[in-house]
Image (tube, rainbow, N blue to C red; front, side):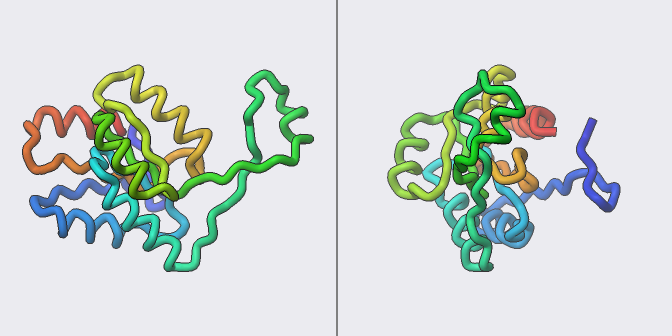
Length: 162
């Protein structure tokens, strides 16, 4: 099933051939209340631009209860007053080199090594979002296909995300 927003509409899917247009669309469709994920983040440029845009709009990073002990009961977790910062932006790429560069360039953003076309890696990515992303799931997902992907691969990616 496809998640529908408050309007009852399904997700907005926009395809654009140019990187500068892609980044502009990502910025326009992400508000300070959103959480953002970019699939195919490469060196993290777009993730950083969105993070900066959210910060400039006055959004302050939120602190959430920290769940470091997975064996604790729900009541024990409620009593624990420790907090962990949750991020508003996550970048995902299947290249370790790209993730290493992104982490070095943009330490305030979170980057994850994963291939969303691999079910086990997608499951791990969902778990990562639940534990570290504001709202536990991204409200905006952008997919940077780098302009040179076969349409079947792009469609499989969109299908996995929905």
